[in-house]
Image (tube, rainbow, N blue to C red):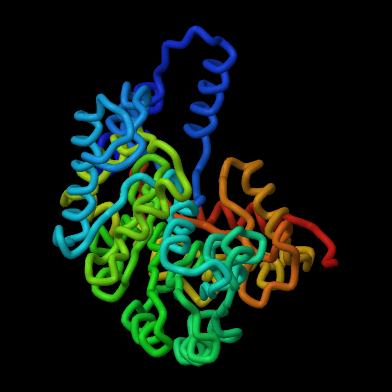
Length: 421
């Protein structure tokens, strides 16, 4: 395994276990083997360090800690208070935030829970949530109808421009003024370009809405100074910790401290409103990851993530594949494999995203099918695939490696023979 920008990923060390349950032990070994043998291009996945995994499996998992530091519902939380406070301090430091100006809650179990807590705390049930549509790159928890966020609240969805496949901020502003949402979500799960957070602030001010930035995908890039920060403009910022931030699977909520008491409302919404006791071992793992991210080597890693994604996009583009929006400014890219598919020597071209995902996985390249702007197919069998560079960059790959990956992808997908529906 090639050396990454921090503790090298040696699966035999990181995942060594001594377990009496032979069935579970075997399944863990199978997954270890699978992870070690594939090229992982899922942009929402990464490999956290041995230290973070050790914290994740620590004795902290034995403790119930309902409540917040110095305000628990159980005894025996002296050490728990220390680890949660440490995670909070490291989170604020990593993103250059002043204590007393910003508050951070490190208890959310996941990103969707974090977003849900923000809505529950700040938006009346039945109020309006304005977010990016799914086909344009938004997340289910940004007000999509299939999510509780689109059922308990009224969704107002904006889309990218049909031609440029990028955000048209003036159109978003017009929609916001017309609909007057309670909160606007500036964030994505499959939008490759830099988001102009200043313009979103202006849009939120124009309609009197809160501005929530979901930076789950780009948190590591922001921490590594490879992507603009949303903190000067947002009221609330949510993030997961396991994508580009390279920690365990968890989430955080940052909120401004002012007369609006956003932090108190959101804390109360998360607990007792949504969750019970926090997963303290998760918080410990996050604390480890935050320290690792606050380093020069992580900044180097974050910049390399962007370089690698751009190399992958340009390499596929040169081979004739349509890259949504023409490229990427971040860690991910979308490829139109259906209408933008390359024809093979027999004149056959175009493969649905589901088929493309399966063909690549058969050859050891893991990605995910994904909807694209102007989507004409089902979300279960969409027109494109989503590719990302974080995981393989952690494993030490650079631009030349991603050029080779692009070649492999091209060869695999060119060989597909399928009739258009």
